[in-house]
Length: 545
Ligand SMILES: Cc1cc2nc3c(=O)[nH]c(=O)nc-3n(C[C@H](O)[C@H](O)[C@H](O)COP(=O)(O)OP(=O)(O)OC[C@H]3O[C@@H](n4cnc5c(N)ncnc54)[C@H](O)[C@@H]3O)c2cc1C
Image (cartoon, rainbow, N blue to C red):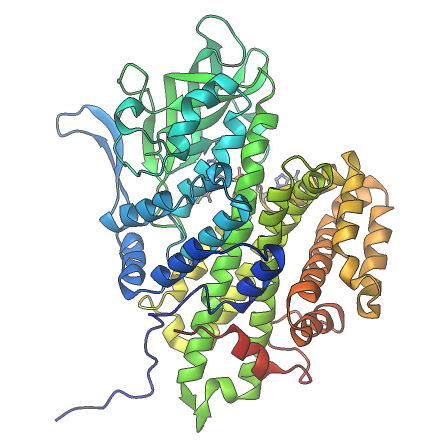
């Protein structure tokens, strides 16, 4: 006899359309690029909802990469082996250009197009987009050394995925990583001790020998790494290939792989350089400026990636609450649950709109000074804020699934483990916020660029205090401002999100955001005013097949 019948359990969220379901996304795209078709992204949105890809996402994380430092005979090989599912994700990302299309797509809005694909595809597996993002970010860095760019760019932008460690003449494609962080300092890269000695002439484009270590180096099976090291003229950026032009392996000893909180499908290694060959990208002493070009792009992806994790967590929470019955009705119909879901939906919509606007600004920044300044200040603001909010957001979304959100069969623990990393890497919160202060000081036009963004809410009485607070902080003494930099950046971000929602979202959604983020605020999700139309906001955000 059966012990029990299974009922009132929620079917898995699959066979749904991640693009079409996402009204924040489609509304933003309609406003930012009204003439553009996003057929590639639409296709990716459908693929990401397929059960076989959801299963691959699980496999890539349940069977994390393994280090094979030696052959059975004791020869050093320094290879990492991944589950086939990892390679499947990488292949799709590369074939669809998520690794380089921002620089190689001839159509208008290349950054925005690529950003939408990145946002959709990372919802089904977020770990593999680390090397995809680093490769996308490599192009502006390598362009600091035109002859290296001429040699490598065609390989970096190629759309064929080849995971072998082989000479590029054989594989015709190249993926990129970066290695800056050392044991004694990650944020403060000036503390790097890795030494670079010129083999002949010194300066940009010339060959050096590296000696030292890196404490974090993700995706160590990439073909090329951008490495910071101390040359005689100061901290310099080097291009370090894993395979040398003569076909032999460069010295690149993987000491061990990190055992990480999340981001498990992706390998993050500790490495040592001893006689490692690297070519200087940019002049000696210009390392930070060179690598900054790369980091600005990866910071955009941190904002996109966090918005993606929020959107996925929200979709899972709403799906669950619509199916699960409790005390005689669906969870979603209980007012206090509707409040939580509506609040999460507002946050997710604001994150998506800000991240997409950053990509749009990156497109506009090519040849436009105003947009270039906005990009410099805005990317930091978006990275800081969206990544910070995502951690609390995903945590709250788990609770909407009850115990089923806490067990490993659910995708929620994976999202929860993944989410803090975007805040840590590519400039942790404070470092990112301090960079924003630097831009504000060095480029006073940046605040003017932001004011243009705030135009749609300039006369809204509900945000008057926030504007006043920003002005007060901007005129305060530098030491005082540094101590309260997070307050300033939070307000700059919230005002920008409110303005974007005013412009692109339905009025009742924009008003709900403004009233709940600038009026009487609670520090927890799900405590917004009962006057907000919870039901309609949740309906707008619901995933549909
Ligand atoms: C999963 C993962 C993968 C990674 N992959 C890579 C990689 O591929 N390549 C790479 O180079 N690095 C990588 N990193 C390293 C990452 O970039 C660093 O961890 C990060 O930059 C912070 O450096 P740190 O760990 O040395 O911390 P620290 O620099 O010691 O910082 C610790 C904390 O102090 C704060 N802080 C530091 N200085 C100041 C200050 N002046 N004022 C106020 N607060 C400050 C920081 O914001 C941070 O919160 C990876 C990290 C992780 C977790």
